[in-house]
Length: 470
Image (cartoon, rainbow, N blue to C red):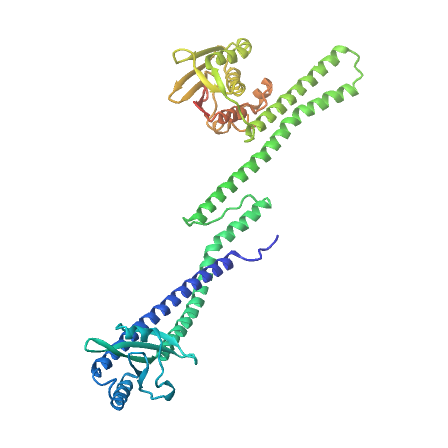
């Protein structure tokens, strides 16, 4: 037996872990992104406010007195922890709180500066050559309702991004711990989920090896529980079918053994006999022929029963006149009935002829078997009645006799193959023991039901119900 390369619980656990990892990754990235946006928005608002404070507080002298301007923006820059740059109307650097010579008189063409010189405040994040990220925030300097220049604050963002990185590392650590916990829980859940599947798989393997008594004790109400119920039902049917097949083979062997033994004895007697009288040979050969007929009838019944049980064997239906069929069937056994001293009565309860979708051959076999059995088991002077009527969407056919009846012990098994209520009587009448089994199977192929009621000494009544459409 091959072992699975990957077990289901491993696949489930890995699947759960991948799903959780993807979800955590998406959540972490969205959280970090949201934090970054919020931090930057707060910093932008704060920096623009600070820039406006400088522009308003020094609007009278920022571009007039260089020394006073530098001192002013240095003090504010230290308080605001930002670099303060004052630009004239052309965007040229007029003063820098860091007083770096390389920046003096340089024209800055950043979008933030251009917007401020147009009278609109603006901010944006920039990356320097050394990799640092800074925030540029520029606001206009207004004098006499005209833009005289701009104030730009350069604020370092590394602390914000450092905090974001710390948060990211913390979330990654938490995610790893959560992932490990999720993996363990996933494994436990996967093992719990796959345990009944493994039980089912083990039971299926045993059934495939011929051990049909396997049942799975899974009481859950989910799909696996339903699958277990279906498996148990299937295994029970297989076991019953196997038991029935074994009984059938044993019964068939027993039924065939008797006539074959008789043929063997009779033929051996002829071989060993020195009898010269042709009449004696004729009697022996007639006995052999009779036993051969019994074998032929038994084999034919076995073949017909097997054919009826094959689902691929389609049965054709056509409209039939029920009354005419009943008269034909009772006519076939009328000779036996006369010899047995039994009267047969046929009655159709509906007005006019009953037309029904039937398979003529199978319907004839059903009624012929029931009527013939009724005649055989009815003492001289008795009566067999055959009636047909329509009840709703069903054709109801009853065969009732005034015969010896069937005991309560035998009644549940009379449709079993080769089951005989009275072995001796069946031997005398030449029955194969398959007639009622064939009748039941033929009724089932019509989509109907067959029931029996009987009491010893009070006769037997068979009731066949066939639906309007099959």
